[in-house]
Image (cartoon, rainbow, N blue to C red; front, side):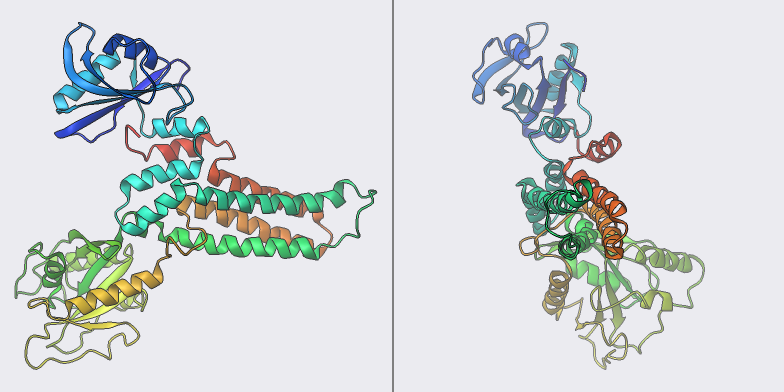
Length: 451
């Protein structure tokens, strides 16, 4: 943002609503309040009722507006929030009028980026704003709240301070060898670095679950044709979402639906059946199922409880385990049912009838227990990070491993210090302590406009 510019954007989604919010930030906000609302000196942080007068002195709407003074706003700049009636045409006329007065449309995430660059929040908190808006589960909301409160940033800064303390201890002997210092002993700083690496490793592990918490657990409903995969999807959703037929191979393309399972958001995907004899268009559907499987987080493998145990593609089966799969034995309402205990015996089994609902509650309970065991608890884990944080922690962890190895050799202290500095820089990038414009551009482009 250039000096003197004032940005404007809608802070509410498009479409009709009771209220629509227009946000502004920049040096022109005080003069805009005077010209638009005929109020030269509005009281900061007070809701004012006024008519919105456009450039032609026509009343566009009766609105509420709040003025925020320099240094006392979200962005750190003079700001305005205008609360209009939520008619899309009316909101567009207000934005167009503000553009005609010299404002420009805000880029995605520009308001939050200003909050970061003005020092109002750390980078972890800025990222949490987007996570909080996009969160699809209670776990994701809790993690985002921890980030937004500054708790995560404090933990990361504590790690950085601990590394700095070790580096200062080592540098004292390198830079001032003639000073009256105790005999050099590297065992203590090595032990401190190893303890820091342990904390980093544990935190970095949580990063691989970030998308599960934020966007949902991608779950593939797979199995042989006519095992009842589509019926299971409909039973889990509580509605007829997928076509059900006795004819094998009815599902050619995948069908997606979202549900909530306890505190988790689940994206259910119903796919074409898996069988080695598939040909033609059915084979194409099966190939798409196998392709989707490579990107899934969880699997519900559906087998027909009235049929013999099937032969399934080995490449698909080898990726299933007790932490990412439940074998669902369907159609237990029918006579002469069998069991499939010999199929994936280490994977939890659930006997259900997707038609009558029998066993569905037990299936959901088993599923929820597995997810709770697999995913980090946002309240118990000392430090839960996102994918970007995890990548930076891994870089720092590798650098500290190198430093420990060099210190153990007792002949490359200068090189060890260089690795420790790399670790400090990597950790600093998590909270924004290191200036990296390309990284910031990429990060804030993922935000919605108006935030």
